[in-house]
Image (cartoon, rainbow, N blue to C red; front, side):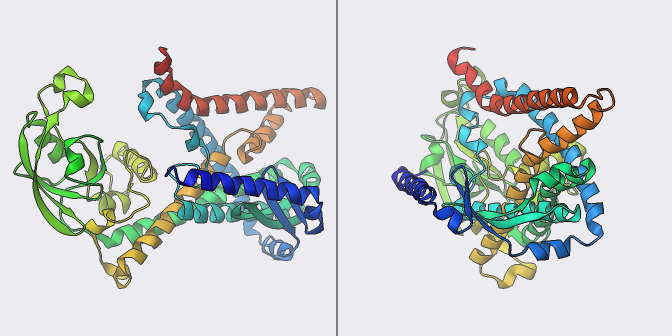
Length: 450
């Protein structure tokens, strides 16, 4: 983040905290049907409650609720396995590549990979569908909706639906589980719909200007830094035509340190021919086997990754392993190692638009594509996170009810069963928290000699 923005953001945050403090001290919140949840301001209203109750009368919600429970339990197991696997390899990740603590916060700008406006729009959509799904299933279960409203944390964050907690506690466990599962399940459904639109409609409408590799990053103080920038499309290197990343790696592997090579690339839709003196790869990797080998200093990927991998990441795969790799690549587009999303110029300049969306100006096309991708991404992350078996997440309450039903087969005393269930839930929640934090701590152990 640009350091000039730090005092601005700090001033805005301080002003917000002062504002909500004054509102609470002057007792203005109650007067205008507002309340606080930490630094988040909630504006309550009863408008829309009848609409939710009307929608909830449809019998389809029972089937959706059952589907939601099955989906959430499946995702819960999947996420635990993923977290365990990630934790098992955490110490093998170099410290410089370890995720920062900011990556755990799903808010735009604070999390460095989430852009402000796309991230904010995605967060609003995700929270609205999440909360209203809870509300509809609560109403279907005959649980009273106390209020609806809007969340503010300086900017609008989304909407909420507040069911009567006492009535929800008294409801049957299966009905309660449907209510809890509906939110993350609907997030995952919205994510799937947006992913299909993004892939089939938008990414299916782009074609690269030429074969080659798209530069997504440039190593600092490398030979490439003075020659190319992210968004360049390299089509030829040292007299060899480059069609994909494998071609480039093979060619660069045959070069020598201090060798001067020629390269051809597109940048800002212009074809450029240039020469560059390569460095010694050993100076950057420290590996003796690289000593004397040429080094250019770029990160990149096949330019065809958008029309090929992103259009049909699963059906275009030639094996289950490749399908998994494509899926991981699909959701990892914003990460620093890839850095393709949000799509922007000059990266977008190496693609042309055809088909249905060709009537749109290129800038408008890519804005729409970014919107659908980030609504997908935020909904996916919110859905997956909320399915974790840790209270106060939705998955935590589902897990708690499931544990209570399980212990109920062996422990008839209600108070004793409650203590056992609470102990298990706290243990699992702490274990989940450890798995998440270990991904930040594990790679950094090498910095203290462990």
